Amino acid sequence: MGEATPLGEFLRARRETLKPQDVGLPEYGRRRVKGLRREEVAMLAGMSSDYYVRLEQGRESSPSAQVAEAVARALSLDEEATEHLHRLIQPPARRRDTADDLVSPHLLQLMDSWTDVPAFVLGPALDILAANAMATALHEGFAAADNLARMVFCDPEGREFHQDWERAAHSCVAELRAAYGHDPDSPRINRLADELSSASPAFADLWARHDVKSKTQEGKHLRHPRVGDLHIQFSAFTVNGAPHQQLVVYQAEPASPTAVAFQRLRSSAEQETARTLHNSDAI
Image (cartoon, helix red, strand yellow):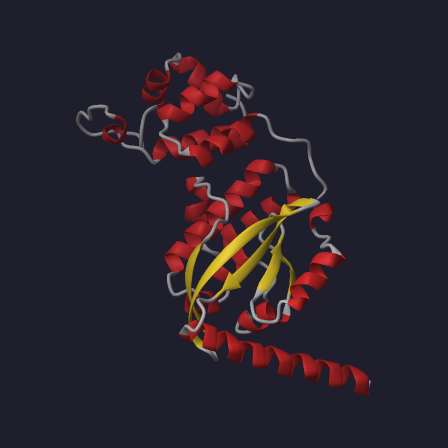
């Protein structure tokens, strides 16, 4: 039997989430396996059971694009999960993690000029690489605003800050899985996954599902310890010149209670900046 591979782990996890009725198969009696059987996936994909077993066991690591599409259909993968499958079949050349930590000075200057909205830059492992004053004020309740996944799963403030914590947790892990698909050998992502799996059973359970979802545009309901409830829209942008970084910007509807709360947050951020400058001048 071959060693477990990212491809094999993904296929097994997705197979185990499906029931026969999900793919139009009859279910007879008590099943001894979780989810679909391997031979059922093979039948749906139009391939031999032995070949599919080799895929899951890591003994067949380079299937064709046609095979990948057939397996994706058999496992009812959506478009993003199918793209993830193709990346795992042909992973890119290893990248150095250090290249993902450098934020352009021009981007830093741009973010600092946005005094009305929180903005921050994320690395592939959801590390917060840079943040403007508003984003720093927004996350002031956390012990350390250094990594979104750690903030969600390991800091008690995470469950207070994210009012729909289950949704935030699922999205966070799915985004991390999407980044993992681009670089399964990334030391940073693997270290973080090991750390959080040990610290949080909730993270370990979600990580084992292999759900995949990149950060997109959607709403969030947050609760700040000083300014209260925030109903925000956020946008995520790929950074030109650093495609494995994302610029995240939070916005409020004009004239909404959240916009008023953002004004209070801005005032707090300005006071903190003035205090920091005063302290540095006094040294």
